[in-house]
Length: 388
Image 1 (spheres, rainbow, N blue to C red):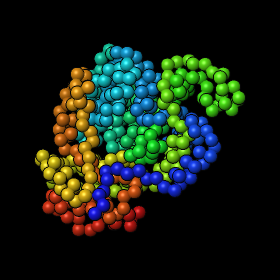
Image 2 (cartoon, rainbow, N blue to C red):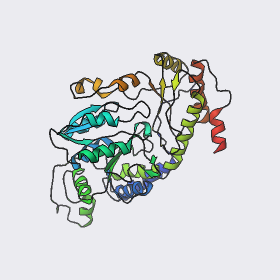
Image 3 (cartoon, rainbow, N blue to C red):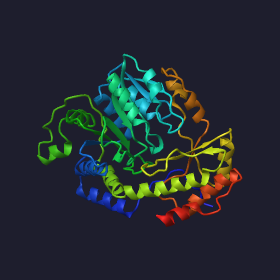
Image 4 (spheres, one colour):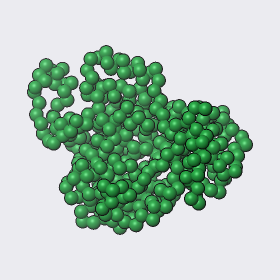
């Protein structure tokens, strides 16, 4: 029996055609296709804000923090229940991570606890929209305004998620996205920063390519490739045409990918909501673009369920080990972590990707329900998809 992976990219013939077309142009570095991808992201987010594409989501976070004014010694409040990329980016920018607890319902940053951590050194707060489910965004912006802080949203999990009808990133301060191999759409590796300020966007555009004030493709087009200046510190964080071509092919199918993921998540929640030993995500997924489906397994039974699923050929995961538990960040200042420390013993990531066949979804559902002595009498996913 074929194993069911937690993640799988959805790459089709259309993607190969886009890559071939980009190769045929003959310019492999950052260029016109990169710009096209940025414009398509802008259109998808339904915004006129500026999009700056990067080679990874971590790169996007790094330069976004610099653009937000983080200087050596400045503190950045960030959830510990998060991937380590945010914390590494903070340190790369010279900042100091200050780790905050999360809420028990949406697993997003606890705004009251975050406010208690604010000091005279605090510069930025990073809210994570965990699994694509919105955090208390309004609360984050309220305390940011009250204390004069910048907000750099980590929307890596929720490309397309809406809050009050608007896509995350189409408003607010600074927002970052990731397009790595397992995200909702991929450019193999990639990311972007979305923001309003033209001045900050120009700074980002320079930083992503070694501080140079003119893009290489434009310099060569004018036949004076040597005619440029270096205006700031910078990095090789640019997104190439080849990677962007994959992103272009993917974003054309983003709504399809999101719809498939939503249907799988709804099927899971419908099948598991009556089981006493688990907690399903607190959302109907109507406005959520889900990156992962995180089931909470109660009463210390998670390891047994992991073994049960493994025996049935079903891969699972744990997202995330809190960053304050990692050796490199153990000495960071942090507040009370009672919710984080509880949640990390419960969360279990089930398979979720846009290539999942109905049979695979039903196998996952049967794997979980059989462990708890329950049963999904009706093929839930089949019923859901038939109703769409």
